[in-house]
Length: 126
Image 1 (tube, rainbow, N blue to C red):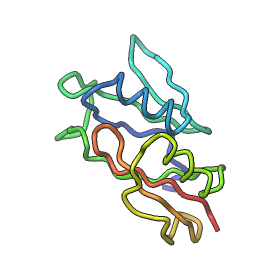
Image 2: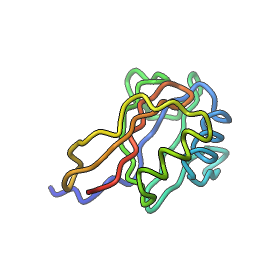
Image 3: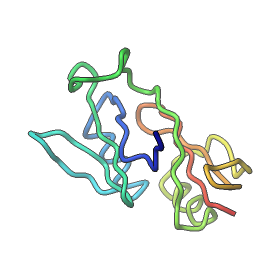
């Protein structure tokens, strides 16, 4: 077996509305509805499906919970501009900018929290 990429992953969240607003307004993702009222966030060729706590779709993770996510997003926007945009919106930068290793090489990253306290790393390849 050879896996080529991630298509989507699921975040379990306390509030679909708050999560959609954050990722749309702060991170610039597109929000859309599919398959009978399910919600997702779209960016590039990937998406994040959203499950609300207590209203998850089957099949689901064994122990779904809000705030258990930790993932990295690669931005086309230069990191300095990302930082300025986050600061302008009053979004606290938990850590960074720092050097890390991405899937295909070195990256520079900042870390923020979404409404559920998921750790969201936003990075540029160097």
